[in-house]
Length: 90
Image (cartoon, rainbow, N blue to C red; front, side):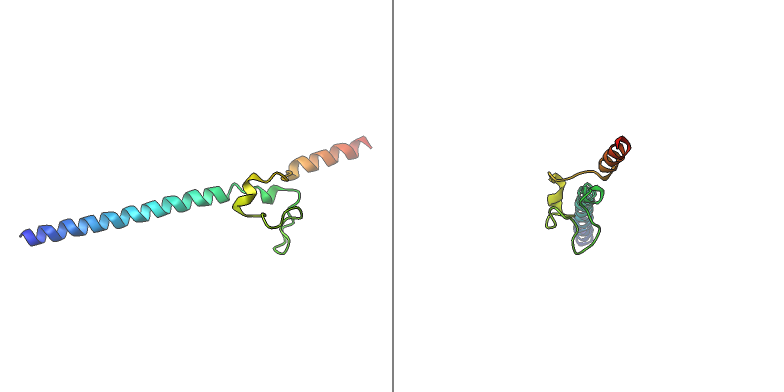
């Protein structure tokens, strides 16, 4: 009887550790994906969309975590609004 209780307790501990590890890795993965979704490159004027030259200003940092703090970022929407205003004035 003691042997059976020991086996049940041991497998319960092993099972809970496996489930906890899976939960922890899943949470880390979700946080990493959220961080990657904050990369602003696709909304930048300098982003080409071509896999050979992703960014005309800094192609090495484009679409990586280093691009999160890109000082050369210029929004496409701001750029198109500014171009429309200057073309109307002319």
